[in-house]
Amino acid sequence: MSLAAAIIPVTPFQQNCALIWDQETKRGVVIDPGGDVAQIEAAIAEAGIAIDRILLTHGHMDHAGGAAELAEALGNVPIEGPQLADAFLLEGLVAQGAKYGLECRPVTPNRWLEEGDQVDIAGIAFDVLHCPGHTPGHVVFVNAAMGIAFVGDVLFQGSIGRTDFPYGDTAALLNAIRTKLFPLGDHIQFLCGHGPASSFGAERQGNPFVGDNAS
Image 1 (cartoon, rainbow, N blue to C red):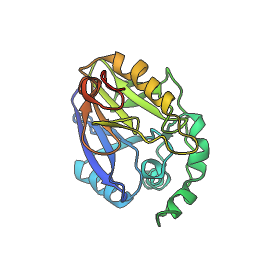
Image 2 (cartoon, rainbow, N blue to C red; image 1 turned 120 degrees about the horizontal axis):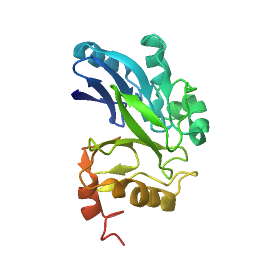
Image 3 (cartoon, rainbow, N blue to C red; image 1 turned 180 degrees about the vertical axis):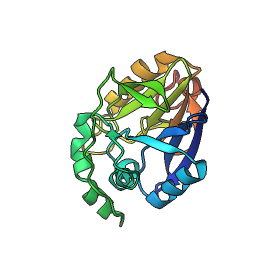
Image 4 (cartoon, rainbow, N blue to C red; image 1 turned 45 degrees about the vertical axis):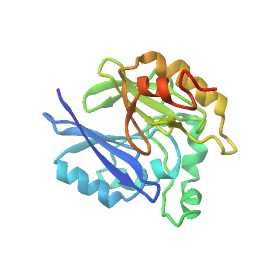
């Protein structure tokens, strides 16, 4: 089994919407379709794949704002994630988008996710980790054996997720990175919600917010 991926930057925030699929079966998932649904559909068609489900890491509009529309366009495929604590964000997507002139629809996932659950990504089981701080219900998808993680807005190359929201929690975010992500191994490569990919090892060594030498 060989995974393939395509990244579609969506919304004015250039969020990394990801298509992940098995090159043999041509089946896969969409992670965090924040908007620009026509572009996502075009990428799916270009890859010639069938989408089994939509996965959401958290409830911010640039990650979830296009999920309801895309699910409907794909024949009502199921939406899974995030954790239930982000329900208020998914319910408030219309208002979130309106602040930036974006049209969003509220989302009710078919399945809320919890720590210890697994999700199917192109026929491969990924573990679900609850990593709050950026939002209360943020989740991460990781397969340690394959060395792959999808971390949303928890961790970035050289940075971490924002916590300056009323519901943000810097201590919780740092704790999640240090106690749940980094112990999985330096070898793990991750795709984040914005900007370039990195590895847990590179961030553990050099990230000024959460690395080994961070204050």
